[in-house]
Each structure stands twice: as C-alpha cells, then as structure tokens.
Image 1: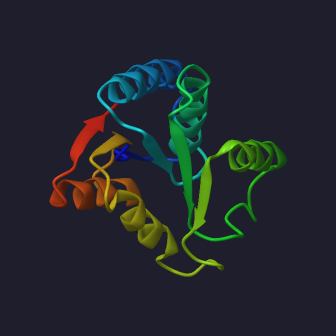
Image 2: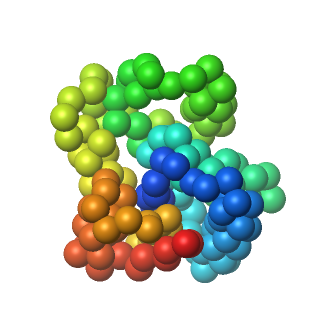
Image 3: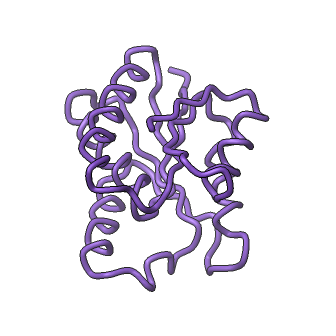
Length: 155
C-alpha cells in the first residue's frame, strides 16, 4: 500500500475560544483525508496547533489502525524551555507515535524551518492553522503551496 501523506503546520498560540472549534475541524478534516486514502500524518511536535493535531490523529488511529502519526521534531532538546504539562503531553505523543524523526540533534537558528520543509516534502496535503502573514507557519504554508500541495486552512 502506497503511503499518502498529510502534514500539519500552525501557530503555537490558540485562543481558548477557538480551541474547541479547531478540534472539531481537525477531526473532520483528518477523517475526510483518511477516507480519501491518507495514511501518514506528520506533526512538528510544537506546543499549540501541532500538539492538537497530533492528539486528533491519535484519536482517529483508535478507529483506523492503518493511520500513522509521524513526529518530525526539530531537535532533541525541543522542550528545554517548556512547562511540565507541555513536556508530559510531548512525551505522550512520542510514546504513541508510529515514528519519530529528529531533523537535527541540537537546536540551531533555522532548525524549525528546516524541520518544516522536511515535513512538507513528499506530502499531498497540508492542514494549517495560519492567521498571520509573517510567521514560521505562513512560511511553511507558502513552501507547501510552491510544492503543489493542497492547503486546508482550519481558521
């Protein structure tokens, strides 16, 4: 079976009033893509949208065991400045992912953008939460668009 890939990109900060609607939108889009043949979902593992998206994939995976969560992490010390709760969720995602790819061993300027490009490469779809015109997310959406990838913005 040929794998069909969807990647996620989105902002780290999500307004609390938007989070519930975003989870519903993510669930709907993930299920729609699974029905159309998507097998692999790539998340960058960051706080915010990446975490919500990965958790939604894991929820979908319970009903569809062929679904795979692949974490593309920018460096091994990604969580060094995070709070205990965020670190716990991150460890949960790592423990439940089907694959974890570290795109660099240590943090360096540009490692997040490098990770984002690698996540996009080979994807057919990109589910985004992009509401700002100048951000790492907007850069990633633009890169995905240049690659001919279908963008699904859940804002």
